[in-house]
Length: 361
Ligand SMILES: [Mn+2]
Image (cartoon, rainbow, N blue to C red; front, side):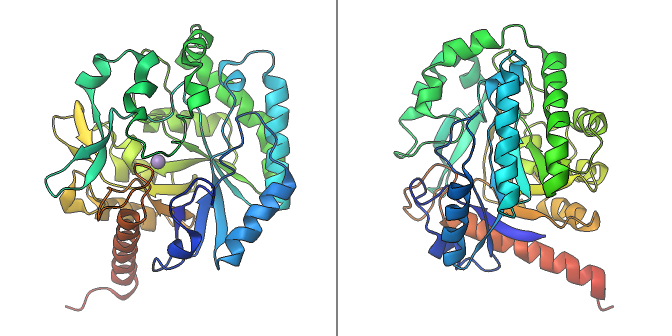
């Protein structure tokens, strides 16, 4: 396991590499070229420059989150061939720069869905939250406007304004795409990627749909153990793997997280670990602090399952609370993610030492 933090790049992130460097145990960042649009080829020089920038701060790039997938690939329209070729070229350029992990998702129209970006908790912190009642009352085409005022002036991944301006067209594009078609398009895409992934040893790590069920009638496939196992089997290559995100799979209380981790042994290449607090079953939840006692998940059992399955990829704390007056992209402040990293490191050390030394009787 390597502890990392996500970093959006100097032009977009309120957190500096120098600050990340001071979080105990963090030597790697998960980063991206945030201004690249889905479907564009990432130039090797820009990847190289990003790498140099990260390394100048005493860190290294542990992986990319994300290289976004163009909608033509997801819906399977004829122009997907060009976009797949572009994606392969991007992977080639990443491989040449010695980058071996790429997180991506295959969610239609919306990336993750939350209905509040700054719900206030009793301790005065604010967190991202989801309420079914709010989703039901919402016109999906107005989803972006409803949260736009809460982004603290930042551009949120998957919710870029230029993308949301076209949301009506996007819905039309997916009109004839059901779960099976989306699945077939994902398999088609992955099969095309495997040769370049093998050549450069690039592990593709699909991020689950968040929340892990259909929203606004759109198809959703990366939501549970059964579907992921089907996907892994359909393209049975170690480079076709998973980002295990506890906060996304965990939105569905039917998902037994430690069990899933064990079932996906060897194919989890990247982990996002965070907690959720459920207030009214799956109808209402919020992103609590990472600590088990602050939310609904047993974080010890999640970390233990990762340890026991020999997980050796990057892990990162996920969305943090906004605390101590910080103003940052919701979920991506420095302070609470640093607390999360320290806590997860502590759990890991305790699990590792108990395993290797045993407890004194
Ligand atoms: Mn995640």
